[in-house]
Image 1 (tube, rainbow, N blue to C red):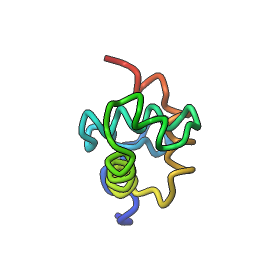
Image 2 (cartoon, helix red, strand yellow; image 1 turned 135 degrees about the vertical axis):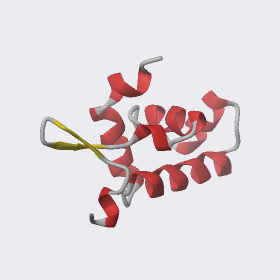
Image 3 (cartoon, rainbow, N blue to C red; image 1 turned 90 degrees about the vertical axis):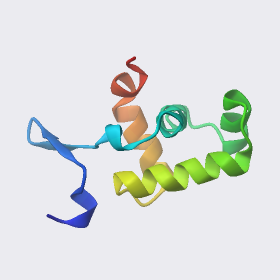
Amino acid sequence: MHPSHAGDQRENGRRQPDFAALTRRETQVLALLASGQPNHSLARQLGISERTVRAHITSLTRKLGIPTRIEAALLAFQYRDTLSAP
């Protein structure tokens, strides 16, 4: 298995990210990335520092095997219903 596919699940023949690998806070940050807001706005909404937001983004992109924040935001937008589910 290719390393970038580690933790992925198949759904209808498509690769689905393994969101279960993320912490609760990483999932919150990922969901907010879909809004396209800058890190300082995400930090304010979550009541954490901008540095902590950057750390969460670094961690979640690594866990999901995606290289950039932009791709993370696109992924978050694509799976926004899954991420917002309780």
